[in-house]
Length: 142
Length: 175
Image 1 (cartoon, rainbow over the protein chains, first blue to last red):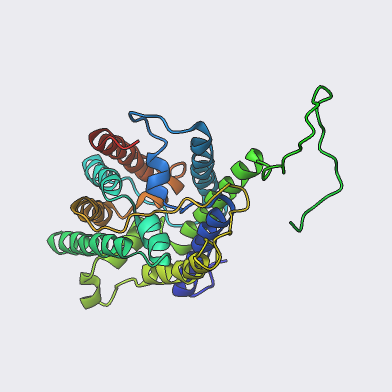
Image 2: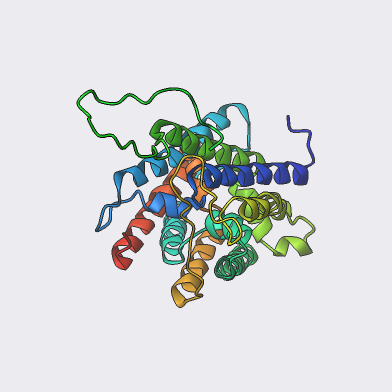
């Protein structure tokens, strides 16, 4: 199962991500933006229409359940638990940032660039730049 | 309409109306939910197979110091390339265009795609903050949710991510 070249396997996974986005677009007419879909399920001032929330909940359930099932038969190196302050700061930044910036790697990256949106290109360049900078600086410091 | 069938629509016996309006596109709520579930599952499979659910692999791409040390992992660029190959075609042929305005999704009345085109401070600041968090832990929202049930590391990250999302929604009053 793991005899593919890593880059080929990465591209194959990417194709599946693209196909999943296409399925959601063709069937429900929606952009597969994971941060937006997830955040919309969280409590806020005005509750949107219930029918809107159902497909979002189903999509997130698909992600979580399939992710748990995949872990059983597609072995990947497990990630040791890192210090909680690191996960807390990173998690808060990712959550807050994706809502403020209206999207993440899927909504701006995969779908936004696919729509050839200049707004999504600007966002993608922005999070790639700070992502590279943060990971690089941290590795050099350590 | 290519799907005209001979099946009669049941009409209530009390109805005496002579006008029978063209039935609207049938709503298929269960099929919509199953399709959304399947799309999420397929997305998860793509993320696991591509290696995006492994923070070490993501950080191996984002850490450019690896270039000098000869152990930079270019995988993530191939993930993005593979996904874009599909979505560039998808968004070119599936949504309505000025020449084909009548296109509809299979299971919904209309497409609901983002319409904003402005590049504002919130977009850039939010994306910049997201990138810092991504570069710190190696999780973006999708992989964090996909690994929720199999990794304590991801589950802890996801809990704080949801908190950050809820905080931002409160602050911005996003409905």
